[in-house]
Length: 406
Image (cartoon, rainbow, N blue to C red; front, side, top):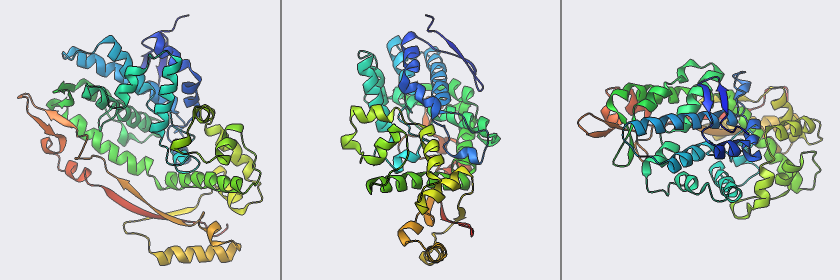
């Protein structure tokens, strides 16, 4: 069987699967599940084209990693065939632990277990199945491998993950502001003292990348309608779990029922739990909501109807924290109108905050290397005054409450 397949990607054109091990990983049921996990959660309610999946993104990241390896080798950085395969595997599987609608699961029916932790559990399970052939990839993914720049290609402020998702999400949403030149960025990469750096002539591409990231966060990822929709999904799952604990019977798939009826956290996330998690995707949640919209429970019924019919809560963004008196007045109004308890009302009336920081000057900096060999942080190297502003977090506060007809 020919395992060196070619995939046609709308962003990059033809993508080649580099070897049979990677082909077998892509064919595995754990990875195929990513076809059923939306890359951008509920953003399709704002941008109708945003239906692309984690599968698209993971394949795209692997393609960019292949390009980065070729560029670095051309510049004299030695990368063995074993390291090349490990880098491709690590980036391919970096998001394999995402749950339905991407981030909603982390805050609702699985307690304090991040998708990165679940990704690692999947990788370790696959390593057992593939006779230890993922050991080096796992070491790089965890940042334990002695060659630091390899970890930076997987996870940093200019990694292959961001290089793909900004360009891909910009394409599928139609938001042109996020369209970065990932090819140019990768061509400008180099390694100095075992650290990933960008050649000085690539400085404008990095500036564009950081500005694009900031704009994409406000326009797309933190768009107020996407925010309220994701909050509603989190609350649907939270309410379903609450009712399940009270022995209320809810129609749901076998995988979803498992997570509704069990208290799952980092300490009891067993191999059985992982296998059940691998059967959970967006379809489980949507089909459950289609059933639950007819449930007797006021909260569950209304939350599901809101999402399915895109008749969401009203959301207002403010520069200052929402006053407790404003929150209380909306709660009181809903309680009296619908004759429900405060606990039930709090599912529909709540506040939160959104933070956008395009660049962090502390930690994993983007470093520019001059022809002289001098290395400087992008903010200092750039004559673009905006970049200093982009490294400061901007926080906005929101309040959500029902429209009058609830």
